[in-house]
Image 1 (cartoon, rainbow, N blue to C red):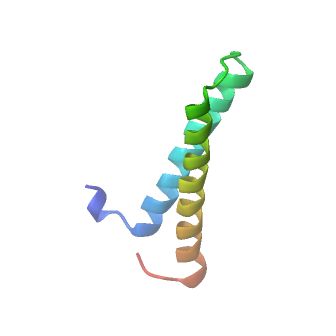
Image 2 (cartoon, helix red, strand yellow):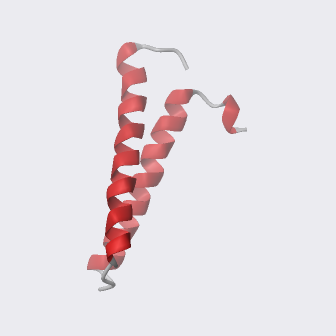
Image 3 (cartoon, rainbow, N blue to C red):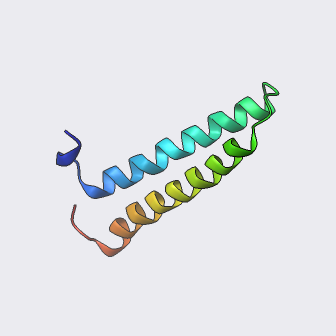
Length: 68
């Protein structure tokens, strides 16, 4: 099913999922008072990098007019 979706949609979906996971982690940290372990902090950096790549890839398709 995912093979039929355009690349732009998949890239923006990657960004949305990463942003949602980061937002949930920050919610747990600041609203619920659960402190993250060092590995969780490193995972946040990796999620932010993956989300940024998804945003740039989705935006590149929008700017350049690359089909699909």
